[in-house]
Image (tube, rainbow, N blue to C red; front, side, top):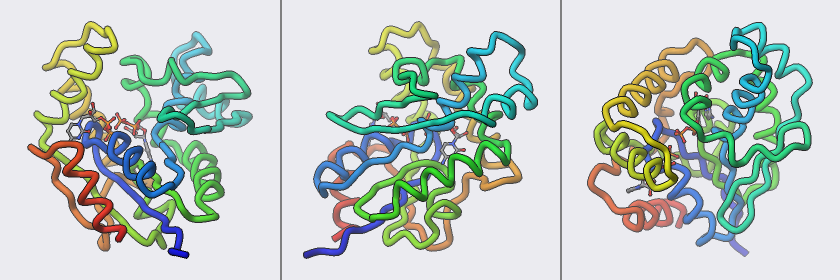
Amino acid sequence: SLKKLVVAIDGPAGAGKSTVAKLAAKALGYIYIDTGAMYRAVAWKALQQKAPVTDALILSVVKDIDVRLSYHDGVTHVFVNGEEATDYIRTPEVSRIVSQVAALGPVREKMVELQRAMAEEGGVLMDGRDIGTHVLPQADVKIFLTASIEERAQRRYREMREKGYDVELAKLQEDIAARDKADSERAISPLVQAADAVLLDTTGLSIEQVVEKILGMCR
Ligand code: CDP
Ligand code: CDP
């Protein structure tokens, strides 16, 4: 039988990582692992404390946090200490603090350990910011997915509007740019294209075209 690959997909917000990774995973019969959901889960838990979200608060929250992912029917379900948080992790509030949460060493160490354990058997597509550079440096296929900031903001805008969030395009673009900057400039495992990753600029490409390119690379 064919070797079960480990596929790493990194890139900035709105590049289409989770959308295309899900479809490619389905086509290959692989597991899809959304690492961003894990950092979002920690951020959500920190917001739940009803206190100013300082680094100290985040560190106290992460100390005894248990984050689990389970993927079925196209949805990544996220559980925090046994409680399902799936519907709460993609709010603008969480998006605004998640990069602060993800910049902290102890948070990353805990999440990376869980991520590596999930990829052990192969047959996985994992997306995030540091998968090809740090989490799975031995991945068989590494893709750095990107698109222009305007197109990424436009995509996210459409998505949030469809979900009923009253967001503004300009504000959303600012939030995404700020998050990209924070993710790219942080000291620990910043967002950067791995030297051996293939750059895939999806500006102007359809979801189907991007999925085809990824499946082609895996073949
Ligand atoms: O879906 P979107 O691109 O908006 O973000 P995400 O993939 O859900 O990731 C949310 C945030 O988590 C990112 O902006 C990063 O700050 C952090 N993250 C990270 O640091 N490392 C990862 N492997 C994945 C996400
Ligand atoms: O995970 P990431 O933040 O990289 O992006 P996403 O959460 O998959 O969001 C990308 C959005 O752009 C979704 O609403 C997709 O339907 C849309 N889109 C895409 O993913 N790829 C394209 N080539 C065109 C649009």
